Figure (tube, rainbow, N blue to C red):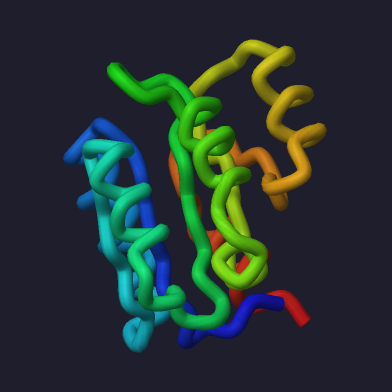
Length: 131
């Protein structure tokens, strides 16, 4: 179970999806801090800034985005220091139905799980409220 007081970072180029997902998260976990990004480079700068991210930062990452894909983001995250990586739990949150994407995500050492969009109530409960 993840600390329900953690910080959530969402990286997805779809503003509507970010808005709906943020609303769903806040509805179930009103105390949670959700930060959304539509530009992966901006999100990477936020995550890798000199100040260490708070403990228990959950990153929801889309795969298919212009400019930087989710795979590019994972590659750049891998280059960050161990102190930053230790505070991150990365979930791929994608609409991709390509089984190769799921296999690749599940094999990546930084990825906790692969989740199909949308971010449902049951998935949120499984991640944040499971005993």
